[in-house]
Image (tube, rainbow, N blue to C red; front, side, top):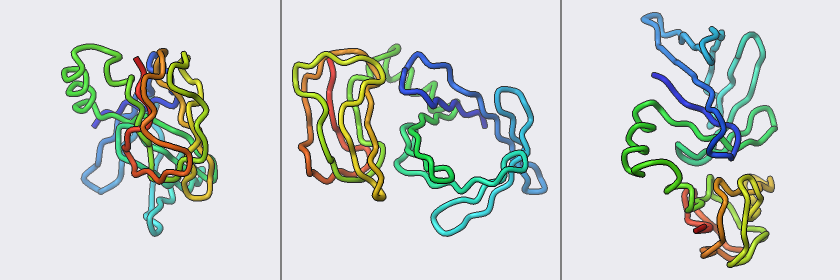
Length: 170
């Protein structure tokens, strides 16, 4: 299965191509942008202990694809992970690029600590819009598109579920 992984909030960022094939032995054949990578993993509670090219990484994910939070050995990042099928289906539903980027949703359950914008503000790609606390870590939710804040769907102190509407841009 081919996956498109984007680490940058900019929708124009080039995704990393990750091809994963399960071999008859149960091992995984993984290629990252065409380069073979030795990967092995073991579930540890709700996390994974992953060995990538001999380096151990403890990995926990939050949220549901395509927008996810990931904590790898204590470092948090937001990623977009789409399978090839999901990517084609999403493009067909949107009728082109950009339409889905105007509604920002929570990548994980948590509590809104602070709002960094107000309705009417003009925002740029990658600009922090609000801060959500999850697993005792503060996470900035950043804009994925340039636009104007037309609605803020949450207030500071509110508890949100993963995939909850946060901010709408025009």
